[in-house]
Figure 1 (cartoon, rainbow, N blue to C red):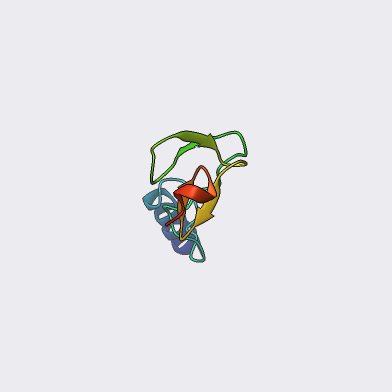
Figure 2 (tube, rainbow, N blue to C red):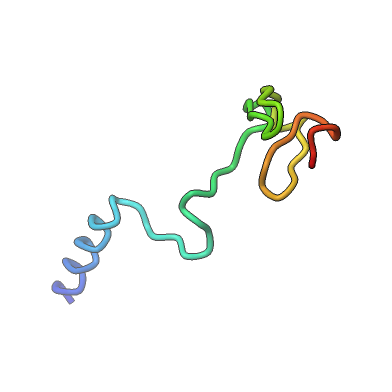
Amino acid sequence: MLIFAIAAVLIYKLFGGRLPTFGKSPHEKKLEDDTLVECDTCHTYVTVKESIIVGGKYYCSRECVP
């Protein structure tokens, strides 16, 4: 039992003190509504709340969406 406990602690430390997540991509992150993002077409900055997201890219208006 003690060996399993030590192995569990070592695995936990190997992952940097965080438990691994298998459902989400590590590069995915949740943006707050007031975070500024750059329009993919005209490079204007708008908030996430005001942006239009198409195919994972942010746009400032319908005119910029290809």
